[in-house]
Image (cartoon, rainbow, N blue to C red):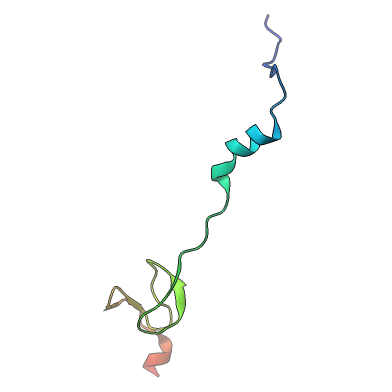
Length: 66
């Protein structure tokens, strides 16, 4: 019976469209310099070169075993 679609009454302006999408932009990665190794890494991530996280040894590296 109802074969009508919802149609906007006015064209959405570029300004309004961009304001609606303002929070969709990419955020900067939180890269920090590790205190122990001095290498850059993401915060709250294991340091892959040393295997340390929050001062504890989490990951055993194959380099250190040989």
